[in-house]
Length: 604
Image (cartoon, rainbow, N blue to C red; front, side):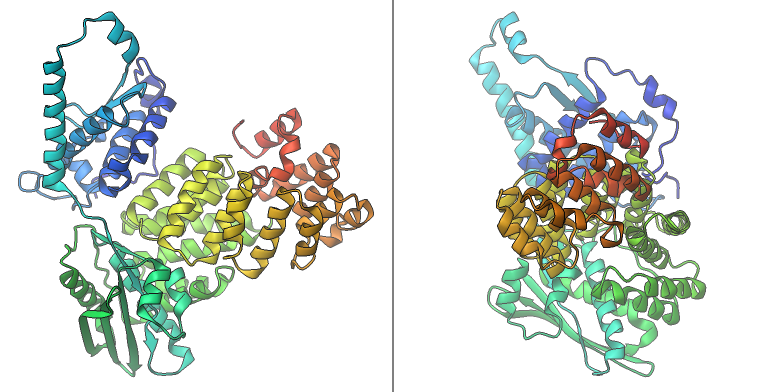
């Protein structure tokens, strides 16, 4: 395709030889995050993606990739053979980026110690350390009219570029589960899968922010009030409709409704052969785009495959809409779909994701084989379609479980860039990499984004509640605990009470939990040593339960011994456990540092 996937780092010697003058690479990365969190960038996903690409390539010593042809493909979704003379997207956006950086350093970033600059005529960023206070003292102040002229020039440049290329906030839309008019539950997978595919297609359209399927599917089979649904999903528009499959015929009816006044903006009816399902999806997307006056954008892809392969693919995706803990049936369907069409990239990406779900449920047994299959499927998907975010997410999960943290982070960030309207990449990034590495505040920020795109997902709320507990923010955590599934909700609320020091209240809550992992800790904190010790027996629970009992008793030796045995589960689960406030009394112990090293976790 003419460019390298982001997850590969080549020519690492350049990284070591790169002349960092006056700053450290980590300082540059921190400065990048400061810039991206500013209002001028946080609301502009494309501009943020552009700046992150330039800075990360520069810090990796890959300046040779910072050229217009590569940037157009990697950042702006152009075809590898696009005409640079006719398409000035990179030059135009570079001008806007320079103006936006100038505006940032003129206002919010005027006291930053490091400046990121994009020199004119090129795309290799510079990092300039500044010492404004010393500079001001060492030179005569400029005339007021000169400073005013500079400020006006910068402001005009910034606002001029903003006006030319400004983007309205993305339009939020929720695709509700299409009704299965055949009334045969066996056909639900097809209606659900088609709904999920429409969400995926809409997520690739510039200016459109569809709500994730996890939240939309909360309304499956329930009476719907459009305004109430729109309020709960924070959506401006609702797409709803129905599917009827009869023999080789497919009938799809949809309508787009404006939430604020229940007004139907557009509707479409399609009666076609089953083999035309991709064309129907395209026409629905086009109808929505025309109804909302949007542009389709260059990042969209049209897949072609047989109806048989696509039907198997939809069957594979159906269990994921119901229970993320049951991936085995999906694996079989994905394999059948691939056998029908070995060139269908989404089937490989789905297979990699299904293996990722299975690996999360395994102990140490069979994990190596699953990881090998997962990596193979993800890499094949990327080979077939280098713009498939789901595949990069799965590959990042492999890297994390292998403690290849740098590669994992790059793949997660690229997955987010390619599919930022879904919550799974943000959630996976938080729980598989940021939390295990102890980067709790960053994990919370990613989960906040996941919550925004998937506001009703119990999995997102459970993950956010857990991260907030690790940060000691108990009151905030409680609100998210209440929105999690029952099993997660009980444990989460019990931990909130433990963090608040309300031990007896915690025991009452945790006694009803399906697992008694934190109950043993609560008994120990309450002085009920005998009850706690009973729960530490091997037949009563797993590694974590014993660790927590010993931690509640304040027994460092046994806690560390139990943690040592837990290392067989790998760095992700081990590292996440170390963020628990219940284990804070171990921090600083040299034996804990040795255990971190054992599973390839960096020192803190």
